[in-house]
Length: 178
Image 1 (cartoon, one colour):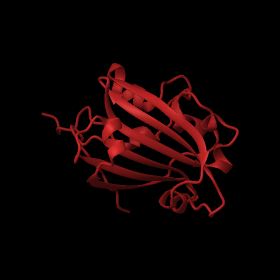
Image 2 (cartoon, one colour):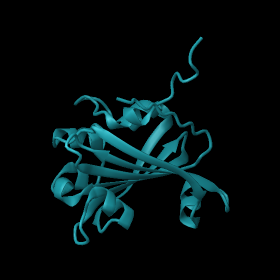
Image 3 (spheres, one colour):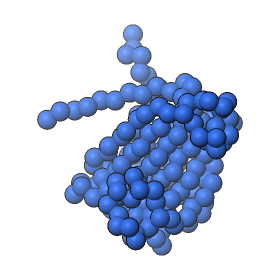
């Protein structure tokens, strides 16, 4: 008898760089059921919480990759991933189009791998735009995840904001102490 968690993925799966020839983790984990639609890649002045988490000054910018994640052709998640422009500018992270192996692979190739990850999860009402993009009814709630990824030296190099249809979601965390 299993633990009841077989087949469930975790954030760690999405933070581990795939092999050079492997697909990005979303494609691998969702299989034929999942599609990642790139909505926009642009250099922006990030929202205040993102700028603060990345340690950016008021004049520094970030590259954001905005995506719509679909499962079985249904919107499941809106994901905005921000990278300091000092890291992303001039790389595949700042180019429109899919990245072979995903952003995690591109970051690893630049010398950035996850050492510490901070995740904040909350439930809140969906904005009208979120409800529309996720195909949710008015007054729906969403699961919001704010993730900060830090290198071994403590440098934050990625912040992702994920807004999810809560239907079918399961959160699982393991915390190692000491």
